Image (tube, rainbow, N blue to C red; front, side, top):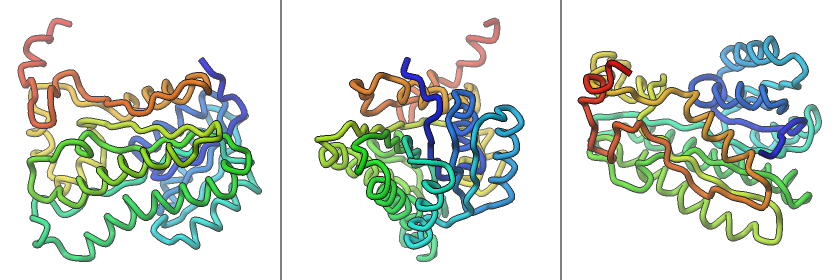
Length: 269
């Protein structure tokens, strides 16, 4: 296991859910944190939680909309100046909006918002971190949070933009891995399956009944499951890259096939 002690990680979408869980997991390993999100209040709450648990870790919170590349540029410069060179980039920020409306029924503003965050924002953050910190030193780890929907077309109405965004992340990651040859920079991808977080609740328009129905009969993942897998991937020796990892509930046998007898069969466990 490769020690992360003293390294600095920049995490987008760090104010809740998977981003928050990754931040706390890295802080436990002694990683300094640059936490990015649009919500300053929520970021500060995560930062305070991490500081309370791990007081020796440097933590900076940066309220920024990653759709705005000039803001991302300034933020990356601030992180390097205030915390240090960026060793780990976790591109976690993402949106899935508008379901169950079909693509042409979506407000075009939602299409713009999802593309802006899920694709452009990820690329802007990666661009400036590479340009200003990783490439000059020829080292670092970039980990992109994709989805199992990036490889398989989801069967639900309202997922075309999100699916295309995640498929784009897969292609971008594969190309970036080739372009960073000649360095020790690793480009990794995690593809979560069903995770019980605010992200999915937002996806079903905050309909708790719809969320309960979707998770009926089995245990979905929780944010800490994804953080655990992220930690495993980035603590491998530098000579090793787990290029991509699918992390799904065991009951999720495929994108649309769920073992809904899981609870009943395993209730004694």
